[in-house]
Length: 356
Image (cartoon, rainbow, N blue to C red; front, side, top):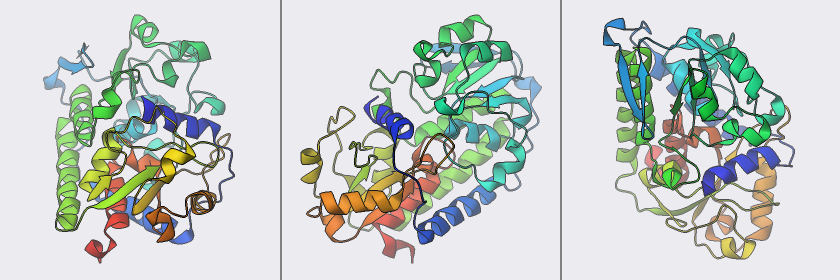
């Protein structure tokens, strides 16, 4: 709950103009994403539903979801799972996306070009209750069952209302409720679980299994590259000069550990936001910080401004004094198919010599 709330607040309330990461970081990150997305999608089994596998029953967040046939009217409400759906090749069944806060990999451009954004830009394109119900989805996929996309106070349809309209609602990312401790327990395995479950739901398990195998092989390769390196003290900063947030649980904790890092905030209850004084005493040798681009209403997060803030405010932290501040696109550290890109970027930031 705490870290996801911090991420949403940073996305919605960030005030700094976005000029983009330094050119070298842009080039490296785009190269990692492009090459690996291309490799991930190459020669996969076709996305032709195996109708003999139905009916399908999935256990999700203490609920049993039953599908007598592959869904035909799907709405995705968070970018990482939207990208998972595209990787599974089911774009012809998607009637709308929301929660898109970063650019898609170019390899998805063709598949996504006909998929509309259902909502208003000021709410991460989350559709209103009226728009959602009128669209008549038979499957809605998002991260959690009580996130902002289902907030009745903002005019969005709740999970109960969607289910009453006839839709199945699937919670991705191993999070059931942000108001519980789910977000603190989830890890990279949640990506594989979502692929397996969604593969069954759409009748494309062979394709899902192939993607899982490739991602797991890459995970092993990255972990092997840093296996003999001394762990590095690391913090994942996700704030700005207005508020300090860190990503220190769930998948972020898992990625840092697998990349050969010791998360300095592991097990620390941050309550979403922390004071300058609390952050200033950490002994991190590397500080990762989340970035995302300017996107309509959202002004983005400028790496130059973040680094200037960290350098001016926390000169005594080892990572700052040694110049080891590393921008990481937030979207590649979420529970989606690009989480392995995030793992690679973090591992290279912590142990650059292991990848020479």
